[in-house]
Each structure stands twice: as structure tokens, then as C-alpha cells.
Length: 262
Image (cartoon, rainbow, N blue to C red; front, side, top):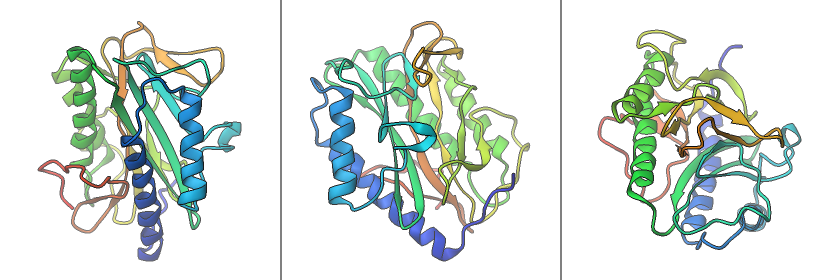
């Protein structure tokens, strides 16, 4: 499949979806997550998207998924299913992965939250996972290759003694949640599809403390680390511009590291 290049008008609509999704995370930043079930958080996010932002939670109904977000606690790598039994505790790390559609275009983003008094080793993992995402985003510009993005992510994780999950990856996004191209979180510089102005995709590394191997639980969704150690993930939706990259889901107050060319 070929990546769908977005027109300036389409990018403007995607920018609006990204802006609204950033507001969802701003709302969650104000929440006390400890003591809440992942289902309660799911329901809070759904009300906010529908009632306050007048948008659509794009994950609900996608591939028959019944919820508006994925909630992945500690050793859960991705696709955690919200439920009443999973109550977030002090000391947990939890990734909340949310999609939002407005005016026909979808934005996708995730953030790993540190809940209460988190152990230093877990804090370090979360920090490196976020840095790895930004290392990948820093490679995005017209004329670069997707292998540059994956190589930068993988290199940063390995430098800190972590492993990048290879079973899941970023993806093109626009009118559909999953479009071409696949955005791998590993690769070789100078290889892969050439990035072109107007491409939109997610950069979303999953970084594990131990092995990169994963397993899927019996619910068919929840993916966990193969060795029971922690995993962390961050994700933004980005657009390739004439001069570099635009982070469409950037949150207010979020610092863009040096080296990311807008």
C-alpha cells in the first residue's frame, strides 16, 4: 500500500483532531488516577470526548473493540482492555492510548503516567521510552527514510539497556486509523520508504525492561512482556512538512526537544 499524502486542507482537519486529543490528555493530567479502575477512566474519557469536545472516540467499535482507550499497566505492553478489576495503584506506571475523530480525520496518541511514588527503575524506563519516541520524531523530514526513524528509536533504547518491541509498530493515519506505511521501531538508517511532505503517521515505541518478546493474554487483546518485567510507551501523530515535522498531537506545555525540526 502507498501512503496517502494529505492536502493542506486535510492537514488542517488533522491538526484540529490532534488539538482536541491533546485536550483529553490535559484533562487526564488533572485526574487522580490512583484508586480508579481502568474502566472508570475509560468512561470518563468517553464522556469528555463526546459531551465536551463533540468528537468521536475512534477506537470504540474498531475491530470490534468495545472501549475508547487501551489501558496498559506495568508489564502490559499495549492493548490493555479497560475493566473494573484493574484498579490503578500508587507506584504503578500506566499507558493510556487514545484515538479521536473529528470532521472525518483521526488522531492517535498515548502517554505513560507515573502514579504516585514510582520506583526509580520504573521512572527511568518511562523517561527513556519518551526520549526514544522523540529520537524517532527528530528524524522525520521530507527526503529521510523510515529506517532512520526506527534506527534512532532502537539505538536509544539499547544504549540504556532496554529492548524495543518488534511485534507492533506505528502506522499511517488519516481518514482511517491504520493506513500505510508501517512505522517500525527498529531498522537501518538509509533504508525503507522515503518520507514525503503530506505524509501523516504515528511514532509509538514500546520499550521493555527485559526481553523484547511478548505474549497475548486469553482475551485476545492484552499484550504483556514475555518475562513479566515493565514496559512503557509514548505516541504522537506527526506530519511530514516542507521543513521538517509537525507534531499534531502535541500537548500544551509539552517540551519539544532540541533537534526536532518543525
